[in-house]
Length: 277
Image (cartoon, rainbow, N blue to C red; front, side, top):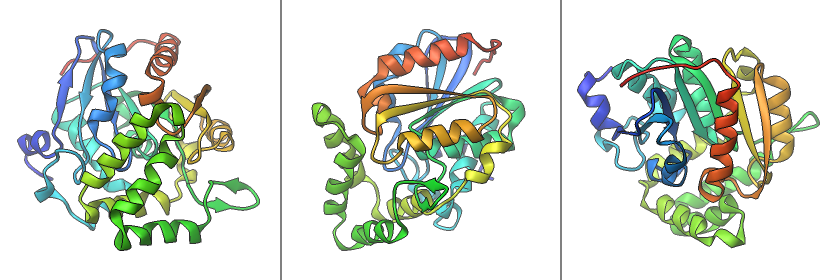
């Protein structure tokens, strides 16, 4: 494990807000901590917010990247564990977008004593179809072709995936920002993260959850359908499902006020937790 001071620099950790309870926000694949800037103003007075970039993303230290470590989601979960340990965080609310919902779940199961609750924004435990019982949204052949496109035409891959993720013609800024973020990410780290994201299956972890969980699902989402929200709610103990009247996979960017409102109501229903950084 790297020296303590290296964790802060390695993951470009930033702390904002004036609240008593800590909320750690984990960005999704191809993104970085800047994608939370629409949501943080809604929560900054209630929480002390910890932001970071996974190694290989954003302004993290690429010298700390290991292709082997980050070949599966446990490697990314270790980043969260390292940050929580380095800052000695307690009663943490983990907020994860997309695949980071599952990464946060993995981390929470390794350091349960530090975690208060989890908020999952557009989560999916598995993007692959496993008929007839589970419809993750994609066949393996389609995802293999999508990953292969990263080698053949990285810019074209980014320009194809971004609007699929954004999913809303009224919010072109999201699609444009995602495409820019995808393109600015190192292709090697991006492909490794993509494979870990799209080919993994963590459905077996859901029943093991011991923390309160808020599931936030879009009404229309090409990457995480309503079926997935219902599936996660059914198989995740202590979970609450809220469906937002929205399109796309980035509710924290397109509908930050609604997301914040659901988070605040969820937190009000739980015993309070206090922490300092």
